[in-house]
Structures are given as C-alpha cells and as structure tokens.
Length: 332
Ligand code: NAD
Ligand code: DAU
Image (tube, rainbow, N blue to C red):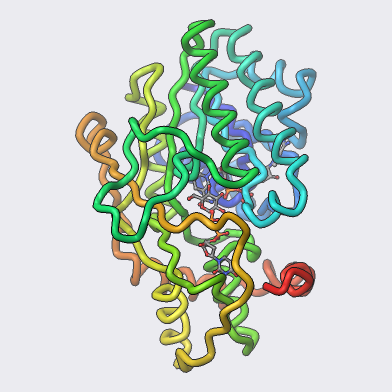
C-alpha cells in the first residue's frame, strides 16, 4: 500500500499511528481531521512533508471525503467523538461523526473499491462483572451502554453490512483502553496526572473499583498495521495487552510516583451507566497474525506517561481550567 488515508490522524491514537506508519513503512499518509477540541496537531509536527499531508475537513461531508478516498489505496478510520462523559451530556455529535461519518467513508470506499480498516472499541460489548472469568472475544454479543459506545457499535454494524452486501474490503479492530502521550486531559489517566501536578486531589468515580484493560497506544498502532497488511477481509480482531487494573490501583500508582499520600483520593459522583469491567482476549490477533505487544509493562509505561505530561505542560495547560470547570459543574 503506497498511499493511506488516516481519518482522525491528528487525535491521540491516530497521530501515534501516523508516526508508526512513517517509521515502519514507505507509504504516504494523508490525514483527514476536523481538528476538534480533541485534536493534537502538534503531535504531527516534524514529520517529513513528503510523507504526511494534513487535510482539515469533516468525515461526514461526502464532497470532502470522496476525492480523498479516490486518491489512496487504503483508508484507516480513527476519527470519532471519543469521550463517554461528553456523550452523556450531548449525544448529537457522536451520532453525526461516528455513525454518519463512518457511513460517508464506507460509501466512498464502496464506490472506489478501496481497502478499509475500521478502528473501534471493546465498549461495544458492554461490560463484565469483576469476578467473571470470561473476557471479551470476537464472538461476544454487542451490548453497548453509553451513547458513545452505541454509536461505535452502530458504526461496526455498518462496516459489517457493507462487507456482506457490497463486498467492501474491510476489517474491524476493537481495542481496549489506550494510554500514552498526547491523550486529551479530559480522559482518566491524563486528568489524574495533571491534577496531581497541580497539587489537587485525584477524582475517582463511584467506588473506584471499575476495571479497564490498559494498552500502550504504540501497541495499538502495531496491531492496526498488522491487520491492515495481513488481516482477512471481513474479519474482526480484538486488540489487548492483558493490562487489567482497577481505577483505584492506577491512581495509587500516580500518587506514589509523586510521593503523595493515597489518602488524597476524592471519590466523586459516578458516571451514569458506568461500565464495570472491560477485558480483552486477543488470541486471534496473536495466533493468526503473529502480533505481540511490546509495551506490556503497565507500570513502566505509566511512569513514562507521567514524565511526558510533566515535560509537556505547555501543550495541556491551556485546556486545563476549562476541562476542570466542566467536571466541577457535574460534581466530578
Ligand atoms: P481523540 O478524541 O483523541 O481523537 C479523535 C480525532 O478525530 C480528533 O483529532 C478529532 O479532531 C477527529 N475528529 C472528530 N470528529 C471528526 C470529524 N467529524 N471529521 C474528521 N475528524 C474528526 O480519540 P482517540 O482516543 O484517539 O480515539 C481514536 C479512535 O480510536 C476512535 O475511533 C475511538 O473510538 C477508538 N478507540 C479509542 C480507544 C481509547 O482508549 N482512546 C480505545 C479503543 C478504540
Ligand atoms: O475501552 C476503550 C475506551 O476507553 C475507548 O473506546 C474510549 O474512547 C476511551 O475514552 C476509553 O473509555 P473510558 O470511558 O473507559 O475512559 P475514561 O478515560 O473516560 O475513563 C476510564 C475510567 O476511569 C472509567 O472507569 C471512568 C473512570 N474515571 C474517569 C475520569 C475522567 C474516573 O474514575 N475519574 C475521572 O476523572
């Protein structure tokens, strides 16, 4: 594949993928991104101009999407409204971008017969009990809880239908919670790191015992590239790195890093419909495509992420007050 269109390539995970493609292939990357509040355009700075082109535009607009899709060999679709809490406040943008945007891209991929990879989330499967021995597999029934996860589930179903009914050459991946540099400070780990840097108390929703299955964003990128290059058309692959931790453990680790007391944790109002636990069984990806995570030591990855936020305050500081004002208004 010589030319790849990456939607949402100025976001947290998409920008990491763009770096990964530039480092590990010879492909030219066109990024299509609307540059919403969540974009991290700075993360693309310094990439070679002859390898990466940024186009600012909306994936839900066919006149923007179609000529770009026509001009590449493959589309890797990351663009989304991505934050559960925001979807509970205002679901409309989630339906437009995640559902209508995916539909718009699929129609262009169908018309021009292009390879399509759809980046999705483990949240489409709902949640697991803390003591459930099962983990999510590719066969777990869909059961989304929030407007965000329902919109991603809807987009997955569109991709499956476009494969079956129209023969679009698509694959899907459903990944667990990513962490690493350039993640917006509205999200759990960067919010808590930057709260502690500011001398404030980290906030845990509910009892703090909800479990997420953490994966470093670099491992997500290598998995998506493996699927793009070697995945079977029409197949879904779950991406995970066996990183289950409850939220309390994560916040305790952040406080320890700064030499602060675990007593500082503040328990705040729970998220409506809060999923209890996510856990990924990624055997299909590992066995069929030979993928392995390279950053599976969560404690080491968390330390590096803390160091990155401490060193890159100029990037997140301009957004901090507005993010915290929005949480404070909700009692969180
Ligand atoms: P993000 O919010 O950091 O980035 C999303 C990017 O999409 C931003 O650059 C934004 O400007 C862009 N965008 C939003 N609406 C757009 C539109 N209408 N047109 C064009 N661009 C638009 O999100 P993220 O955390 O990097 O997630 C990227 C993808 O990965 C999403 O599809 C998400 O569902 C999926 N995913 C995320 C995680 C996670 O832990 N963050 C885990 C699994 C899957
Ligand atoms: O599982 C994959 C999903 O992971 C992705 O599809 C989403 O795009 C991504 O945002 C993430 O969703 P979560 O809802 O799991 O992530 P978030 O960072 O919002 O919250 C992680 C956990 O931390 C969750 O149990 C809620 C909790 N939380 C969150 C915040 C912001 C807190 O306890 N306190 C907080 O301040």
